[in-house]
Length: 354
Ligand code: ADP
Ligand code: GN1
Ligand code: MG
Image (cartoon, rainbow, N blue to C red; front, side, top):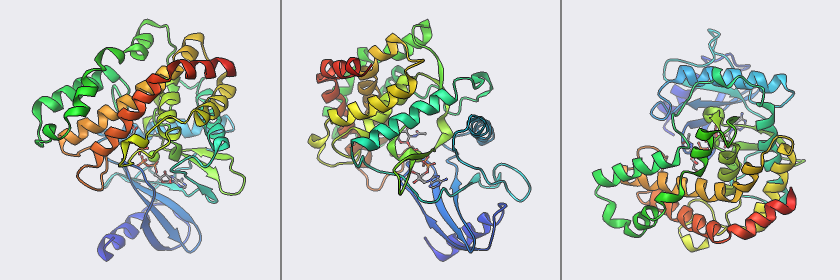
């Protein structure tokens, strides 16, 4: 970070109602969407985020969701993010679109599972999250990203990106395009289930990556579910499937050797145990039946989104090098294929837990 950028950020941090004098601002975390900074004062630490206005065009609505959701979670006795208001008493800084949270001390965001217990704790935390929001008035929530997990629509956006081939990259990803094109009729089970009422609509997190949980550095307990930008009405299967996609993969999302991407059935089992233990009183038979499918679908959807962004010229996800989105797409397609090949084993695991 340049000196002038750093002093601009210090100036921005001081527009919030913080304790102490800012001594340092550093880039922080591994999120793909917002720009996150750690702000240190002589008294406390804070998280400052520049909200990605391309991804979230209505920041006002987004922030009103976060205020309502964090208040609700707190009223249900759950630990959650604490927003720091601006010195003018607003919940975010309109000039530039920044918000601030108290830094949750003595916690760690994991980029990969440490062991099976990590996943049981993570599954339990996301399960408790959906429970705590079960009596939240969903109609008061704004849709921050419309059709976020509408996988057939994501496929449609991919087809359009391919047709436009804006960055002249389609010739570099023929096998991935072929694979995605072969999956077109496998994408609609959840969206159809929600539409015909056979799957319940709930308030869900929708971005259940392992690094969206803060774990206590000493005890390993879950201290908070974070990254609340996509809390919207949805299916709990989105949360289950997306968590498996990221945390129960033997390889990381950006592993360059896609062959290494493979479902770790022990980690799958551990996550499912934690999740089902939390939601056992409300989960329905159809949700249980579709849990392995949801892991396939959310993984494939993410692969489709990465390839769409690659074709569009890397306009959505933060990337570190030109093929980054293609590399990510490959791990997701390999993992989706692996999950589908093991569907009956995974089904047996789920039924043995329930
Ligand atoms: P993105 O939407 O870009 O993923 P996140 O809100 O998930 O942004 O934040 C990125 C990272 O910043 C998290 O993975 C975590 O490491 C860290 N983080 C965010 N909020 C806090 C907080 N309140 N306390 C401690 N760390 C945090
Ligand atoms: C983004 O914000 P982050 O890094 O937690 C994305 C998710 C993707 C994920 C892939 C708002 O999550 O949907 O699954 O990257 N978030 C948004 O790593 O698009
Ligand atoms: Mg995040």
